[in-house]
Image (cartoon, rainbow, N blue to C red):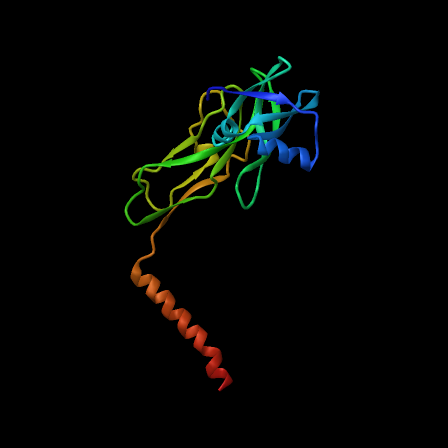
Length: 203
């Protein structure tokens, strides 16, 4: 994943009022921390930041008006629950070559065997990877797989340099048999009889 460059400005005003003024100016309040450095409060460009954090684990190269430049990952993105606009971003500093743990999306490819249901039990998988080589996704190919197939974390084909940071037995994809219409009707019939039983007892 390539670096996304963002130009930030330092901020010295804090509190809700200051944050509102920053957002009205089309910017987003943020803080950078990590690697033993003092937290640095900044304002990020609104639109560019919103587009950047749409990508899971986007690697951000942030240049601040003080002349410094750091690599960072978005640790927490706070959004307004009604408007869905970004209210604040917490950024953690990373260094080239260091390992970080990140949740990487799981993408299912292909079509399983007929009359099956593919259930994605875990939409992300925790991996340990180099900060500058975070994969965009991990792919699981289910083409033609029969009912009863289970894909665990240990079965995943990981990108080069990536290691599992979860239990290898974690269930990721489960393929089950699709229930027939006749079986569904039978289940509904049984449920109906069971529901009527208490009424008969009361009578």
